[in-house]
Every structure is written in structure tokens, then in C-alpha cells.
Image 1 (cartoon, rainbow, N blue to C red):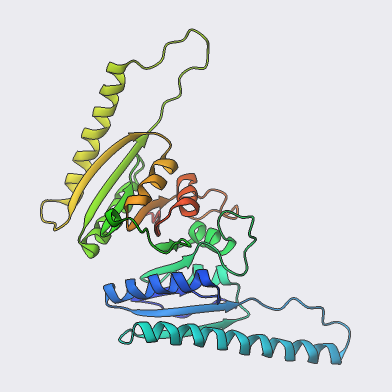
Image 2 (tube, rainbow, N blue to C red):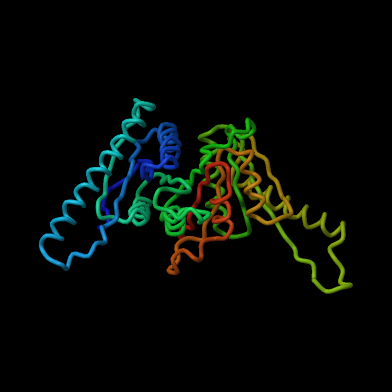
Length: 305
């Protein structure tokens, strides 16, 4: 069943009892405290798919098994909530169990009203060979609101990262939404806003054809830097308490942003939004960064006006 729970002014974190979800829960709890909102720990258990066509005895057995699964899920969720409450005694924590609900769909529904939805990169239900967990991948592909994917490392350990928010900006109209989300985060953390833009060019792969000379390269680089500086100045304004750095780099966007995750407490990227093809149209940059970053990644969906 689809949840109709109102998560307004709450941070929602997906819980499954794994070590990865514990890391995500701790990050979510800290963020909820910073935002001054409550935390909802959501555990969804999918419907049992067991054949029940062979008589009353089997149906009874399935029902009893379903009850045991529900009890175990409730016990696991309550234990996780108790651990979070012990670390954050002043935080309003709600432990919500949604039975007969697909985890990915339940979390997508939560993004409709939640202040922020948080997941780990992997959980108990994922295939280890996958670079990004199935639930996390589905969520960032179909989310209606901001989602944070927390890596196994939790947060970057480099001292340079503390308080730094890095954001990738491109030439798309959606970049203004992504940049604004990063500005909001920089105001919250009070450290530094690192605005990144990368560009690439592909030399013609024919022998004897010219490549971009040094003068032209410098001109293109300078143009990108000037345009980005104007965009950032217009959107950030002059009244801010955080440092601002603008950086233009030659290279693949996903690789540039992943490298930046080593010097950031949070990395912000935009997503192309939902797709009817099971998330196949998720922006390649967002997907690359979500699976490769060493710091938490805030994915901002394209909310068309």
C-alpha cells in the first residue's frame, strides 16, 4: 500500500537494520538537529510473495510467517530508534514501520512532503555487485524533493572538508535551483561554498587535424570563469557569512565533482528528474557522483515551474 503519511518539516531516513543505514541515520539525525526539525525513521517491508493456492493450512502458515516478519522489523526499527535517541536526546524521533510497502516506493512518496530524505548507498536488500543500491538509485531517479545519499564512509575525513559545500553548475536552466540549494546549505554550515563548472572538448580524431591551441584554450577557460562568476554573484548576493570560491576545470563533470568530494562536507548536484523508463534518464553526472563520492551527496530534482 502507498503511504499517505505527512512528513512536513521532518527529515526522513530509510532504515533497514544494516550498518550502512545506521551511518545514514546518524547523518540524518545531525542534519535534523541543525534544521530544528524532527526525524522520521522509516522502515518499509515489501509484501510477501509466497504461493497460497494450496489450501487453508498454507495460508495460515504464510500469515503466521508474515506476523513474525512484522515483529522482527518492528524490533529492529525500535532498536535503531533507541540508539538514535540515546545519541540525540532532544530530537523528536518517530519510528515508522510500513508493512506491505516497497521500500523504494515508500521513500519516493516521502519526498513529496519531507524537508529532506536520506538514504545510504547500499542496504540489506541490494545486490553487492551493483555500484549504487537499488533503493537509492530508484529514489534519486524518481524523487519529488531533495535527497541525500550518504556513503559508507559517512562524511569526508579531510580537515579541509569541514563546513565546505561543493556544487556542480552547468549550462542548464536547472542549475539555478541546484545552486540555490547549495547556497542554503552553505548558510546552514557557515563555511565555504565551492562552485564548480567543468568543460570538455573532443579533438577531431583524424590524423593531421589541429587541436585547440593555448591561446584559444585560455580564452574559452576565461569566458567560462567570467560567466560563472557573474551567475554566482547574482545568486549569492553580497550579504553572506560564508566564503565563496568559483572554479572552472577541464574534465568530465562526474570525475571533477567526485574529486571535489574529498574537500567537501556536502556535495550538491542536480538531477534531470523522474523518468518513465525506470530511472534510465537519471543524469549521468548525478548517478556517477552518488556512487563515487566520499562525502554525502545532495541530489536536487528538476522541479519545473
